[in-house]
Amino acid sequence: MNGNLKLAIQKSGRLTEKSLQLLRACGLDIENYSDRLIVSARNYELDLLFLRDDDIPEYVQDGVADIGIVGEDVVIEKEADVEIIKRLAYGRCRLMLAGPEDRNIPELDQLNGKRVATSYPKILSNFFRNNKIDAKIIQISGSVEIAPSLGIADYICDIVSTGNTLKLNKLKKFITVFDSEAVLIGSKNLTSDTEKFLKLKNLILRIESALNAKNSKYLMMNIPKSALQKIREILPALKSPTILPLADESMLAVHAVIPSEMFWEIQEKLHLAGASGLLLIPIENMIL
Ligand code: ATP
Ligand code: ZN
Image 1 (cartoon, rainbow, N blue to C red):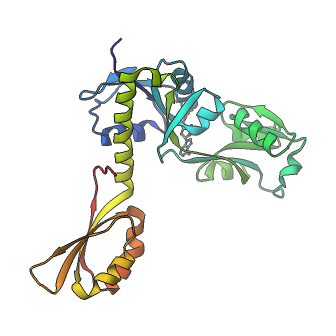
Image 2: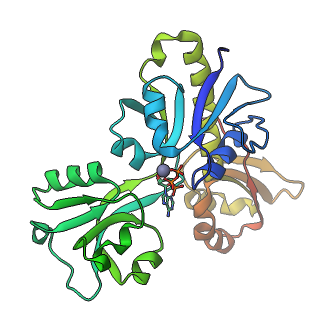
Image 3: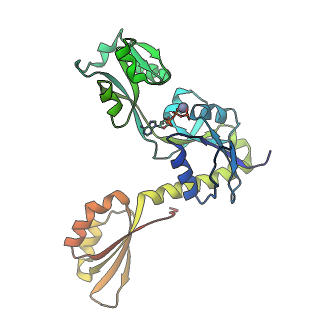
């Protein structure tokens, strides 16, 4: 056993590529993993364990892995005794109730006494308990959406993304049961092991920096000096912008970090206020 931090991620599935991308954005050099169960980062004291996502919460709980990346839906469904350290803003999906499209959308209390098929029985029974609904949960491990047409359930509760699968099966969604995203989870025993804890703190800092960078862009532009006040009002108040003199004394250069999604919203206003030569640049890392 080496003293490396052990991080479990999904072996092959929806979270695999994005998780590897995030780790690489953290500066970890990870070789293409092919079929191996464990891969060590070349430049960091970290071992990656590739596992089925359903097993990750339990392995982290039991300390087989120190930390893991997995969907929050799986963490809650497995009722694992682990800590959610960080939400990772990818793998977003929605667990929803759906029913036959040719029937009226039911009020929640009309689900009383009905059969609902799902592969998330724990999350669904929590939801029913919180809403005081007494419905029968039929547990199915895959292809939940065919349950109504097979006559084994009246409704389903399943992950919905585009809704195409529902449409194909003549179903329509009606209520969100749970919103999920990928999360970094940690073993509750980790605090006692100080050296590993320090390694984890460093990794979390890198993850935060990579997530901040992904959501932000560096905006540069030239403006007439007289427009400075107006431009400052348009820019989001994240941080004070950098203002630099230009060779043409009537002009200034303004640099600012902005939320990526805001660019198209503000670029026209900036133009109207007199800004020119807008440059939008990706940020590799950002430590706040
Ligand atoms: P495994 O073989 O590892 O058990 P799986 O088939 O159970 O894989 P995936 O379908 O790869 O799991 O989904 C992994 C996680 O990705 C889910 O737990 C959920 O959090 C998230 N997810 C599921 N469906 C979607 C979707 N349509 N869009 C985005 N994220 C999703
Ligand atoms: Zn799975």
